[in-house]
Amino acid sequence: MTTVIDEEVRVAGASTGSSDSRRKLVAGAADMIRRRGFAATSVRELAKHAHAPLGSTYHYFPGGKNQLASEAVTFAGELATKLLTRELEKGPVDGLHAFLQMWRKIVVDSDFRAGCPVLAVAVEDLSEGEDAPRIAAAQAFRQWTELLADSLGEHGAGRAEAARTATLIVAAVEGSIALCRAERGIEPLDRIAEQLELVVRQYITN
Image 1 (cartoon, rainbow, N blue to C red):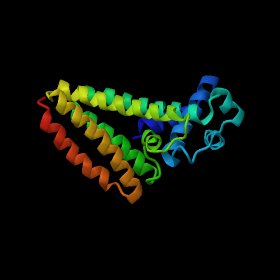
Image 2 (image 1 turned 90 degrees about the vertical axis):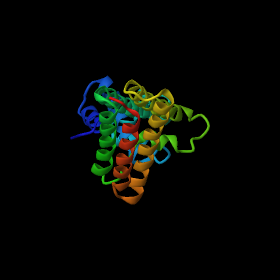
Image 3 (image 1 turned 180 degrees about the vertical axis):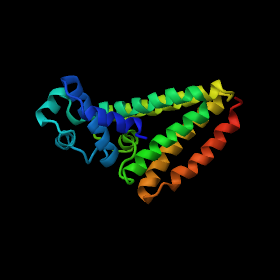
Image 4 (image 1 turned 30 degrees about the horizontal axis):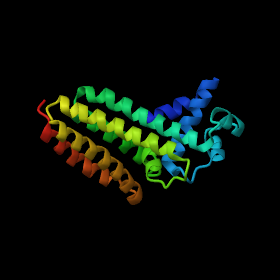
């Protein structure tokens, strides 16, 4: 099973027209940032990674690396949002399982070299004028948290419990991804998966 991010990167890479070329660059940037982070990635390297001319990169993204990274983070965030939106229709536990499985596959299939591009940007010390990627990261985290909280509320959790649990899920998953990459092992993610399900089931009634 490919993840939503991997599938979009693959589809974008096979695209042809001008709008597809732009999407290909955004998808390629998301893939590179999740592997190397924001600071270690240049526009030249992004263009090379996406198999695109450097000139076309600046044509589509006159704001340079800052603009491209912001759109890449938004792109990755929205893909995870789509997954959550679809799977949470089945309930909070199903949504949690799908969210965990998506990140588990990304980490394992990349041999622990790729993580979350949203987290990669969020934790970097960005220079003055580079707020846009951080703002995009904050928005992605907020969307995921709100979706999880809404689903928990719809299934019996109180408003405060739903908000706290949703924040816990996002924070725990993102943190465990970093641990997995550092340890070159999937155990941190699997351990928090068990605990998060227990917490979710504690608050839902249906």
